[in-house]
Amino acid sequence: MSELNTKTPPAANQASDPEEKGKPGSIKKAEEEEEIDIDLTAPETEKAALAIQGKFRRFQKRKKDSSS
Image 1 (cartoon, one colour):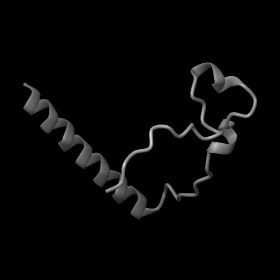
Image 2 (cartoon, helix red, strand yellow):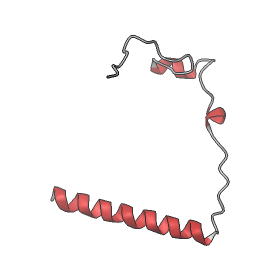
Image 3 (cartoon, rainbow, N blue to C red):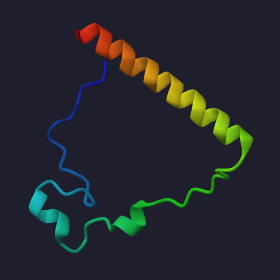
Image 4 (cartoon, helix red, strand yellow):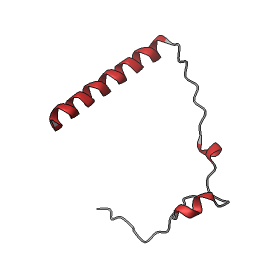
């Protein structure tokens, strides 16, 4: 079995304190972003978006029905 090691310090690029986020040496937002090249007009993209939206709406409906 593997055990969690809770004594390891956070990585150098992770801010352990909210005040450290603005300090130099923290990850810049521009470095975190990846450029994604998706053709939003492609028929496959539209089909995938409709499928995802439909599943999400069904999930929300079930969630609402079970909490009522």
